[in-house]
Image (cartoon, rainbow, N blue to C red; front, side, top):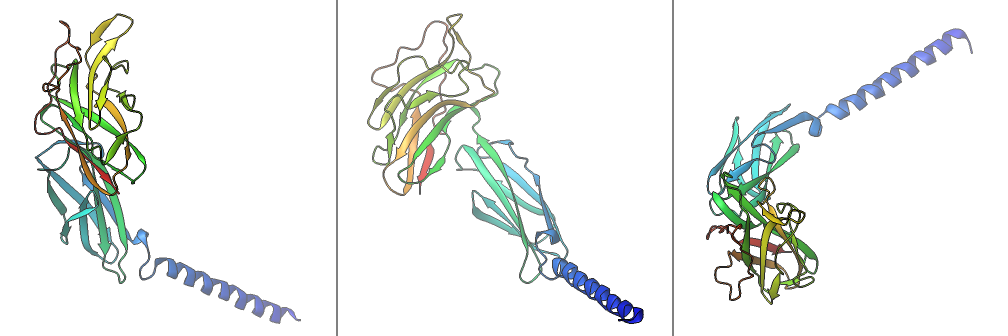
Length: 283
């Protein structure tokens, strides 16, 4: 083979590589080109923000797309609440009637390609009660499995930190079963040394517990740690099949046998009467 023919074959081989490369590049960026063609940012709220139950939460998002943004959807706990087709993309979430505790805000943006590309962003925020209250944080659990339910507190404003509280937690014994009876009730991280004073008492459908901060070395009562919200954890087994079941709390005022927690150095805290229930959803 002469040099001229070798050079010609080489040129055609190089051209072929360039064509294949161009096709590959074009395919990565062409119609319906994937998530790189669309961007989305939740500008408000920020993850971890606290909002008072019953007030509005302003949710805003910024989205751009090579083919244009067709729509932006807003979800609360995976339930579609609003669709906005015009920038700025906004949804005003009315939290009246929403449970206390964590909620997930999810936003999905669609571009104008056919089929549309989508991109999803999410943040988790917490709804709190005004003033001091104790509440159960809602949870989801598969039927037959165990779930640890947090009993939390809100102390707003926290000018006078709470010392402790005696409470009764009521649950549907046909839906939930204590894993180890009263031993399934454990202290949360708001108790300074993780200590529950007084024995937990449980009967079917009811738990009574007294919670207080305690310094065992100094043998004295301390304030609960208001930078943490969890004061109790209760471990249940979901036994009643799919469906929602409610846990309710009162401050123990109606308990038939008080647990004799309070001393002259302990000041009782009283949960708010209307904001203390939580839901366990069995799937």
